Image 1 (cartoon, helix red, strand yellow):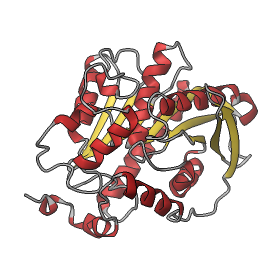
Image 2: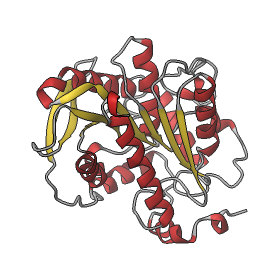
Image 3: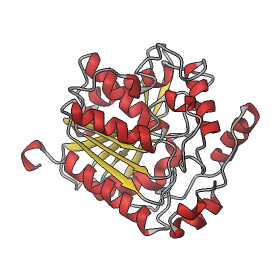
Image 4: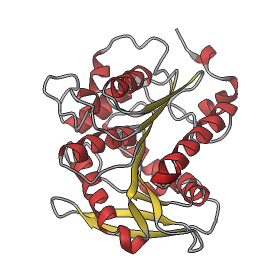
Length: 317
């Protein structure tokens, strides 16, 4: 049964604009070519965008887009370390300038967005290790960039949210760098969701069960759902979520990831981690990309408010 009747009516034009792509090896190449020409315009503002380079663990030259607010904004700055989405197989930092640039101005913060390598050409652990290397560069460059090392948190959407959650686990287990927060928007956390035959009304649009299996298989280099998958690939596999940074999770009620996101929030709370969960009715994967509906604007405002709280100096929270 179709879940279209459950979609927020204001979101239907967005649903019609972004057709669901069935991913396979051939269509992935088409998707990447389409992404290269689908960059949304970013409104000009006083934020400066710089391209920097870090060195990954294997010597790869890793690109970082760094957004810095106007010099009149008091330093040191809070910083969002951003990890883009794309099902682990697509996306790029530059595709997110349309919302990262205004966010840096609105919050008066720095944003560093990492160009991690994509699967299937670069399966786990390369993506999360690239993210770890980029975070290390950000911490090392903090003084030069005017960033407060104590106010660096991680943010990601979809696969980027999964990598953000994995990075929070990795930094905890390696003894740092410490993160001030993790902000996860419909994060892709659990490969075991691929083993479920029935997702109810969730996952019909944009990111489907078929595409989810393709993305997880690409990242893992094997069929999802197998025993022994690393929690640094699939963070829902982590047995211990204690001592992670304060967390914020948002998802749509029609998103394929709704159940795993709700469960992750529940487990964080049970482990003593402060966690705020938002579940938006009538919303599918990617519903907040454009402000076409009240629910999209509300989600964006909720995320911005959470970031503003997280980024405040400790004495002002």
